[in-house]
Length: 130
Image 1 (cartoon, helix red, strand yellow):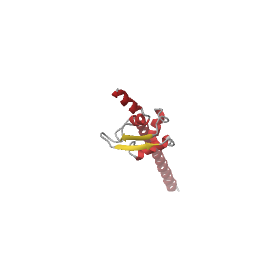
Image 2 (cartoon, one colour):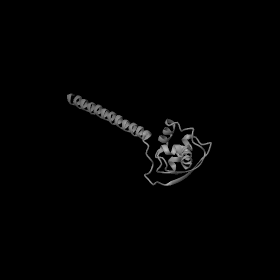
Image 3 (cartoon, one colour):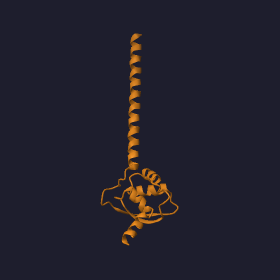
């Protein structure tokens, strides 16, 4: 009888240890994911290094901001559509993009992409030419 109680105690102890370890690993993984997402949102890194590739995209008036972000991800201009969508919201560019055709480069940073889609890069180039 004492042997059975001892084995049960050992089994319960091992079960508790396993649960604690799983909780610790889960918290670690969640923290790692939160850090990666947070860093990706504030980091202004391009999808590819210079010189990158030129991509032609067309935006229409009926596209949502989420659809624009997904299009940019499919074309390789951003790494993650959800992260870019959050960046659009944080930087207040979500309703500023204009419909039309664009030639964008995969080495453009998210901020450059946002400014290009809002027509700000074209305005700056025109000012520089004058």
